[in-house]
Length: 326
Image (cartoon, rainbow, N blue to C red; front, side, top):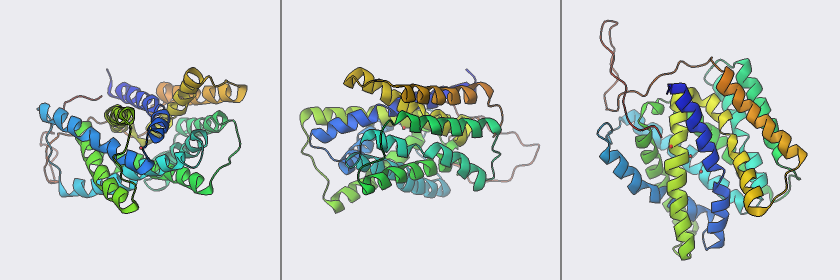
């Protein structure tokens, strides 16, 4: 399978997994959990599994450079952890429909940010697909923008921090890390920072029901090993702009869950919104042939940057599993 095809597939599956997250989070809240506590446990429970997978993979180790460590701290705290924290907090103050709509300002922010701050070429296909997907998101939300101003602010902020996460992974060089190693360190940094934040705010708790704990463990492994890891794989292969647009499949998944689980009714604006989003996805997958050149992940070993002559051989790309999201 071609590298770009793997990237497209990984991001679309990632979006669909993320689409089930609000349903699981709401259930955990009803079983004694809270947003800050859930963010910590989500990252924490994934660590042993990620450690085991890396340890069993002979092509991956735990070594990172000083520069990679600094970049991981930045994106782990201000992108990875901050997105999950702000989005989960917003669920307590506004409906998941409003929160999801506001959160999904991030695909257009990724496109604009890459063009403005990194001088990436903004192709017509990507721009049109970005506008189309954004219109589709707002059509999916069939209601008024009401609720707590604090909740609205948190949902908007989650979109900003997630756009930072997607862009920074793409542009800082972290996408050269093996996806499992990248996800492990992001989860480690996020779990430590959220543990102290939960203690400081008095929201750390062990008082969940048995079913609440079970769903928390499932959400942690399902989202972190599935959605996050797949998104990292996608960013490595197709870049931040296309990844941002394709991940808008997430709210469509939420709509499908709402219809199947809660017997919600589909209306014309929602159907048109789904068509817009799916059209944007088809445009990216079928017609986007421009942008950053596709590169396979760099060798998974630690070396300091060196200057190489044109006659020196290049290292072989790292091998390993490519498969896995707040």
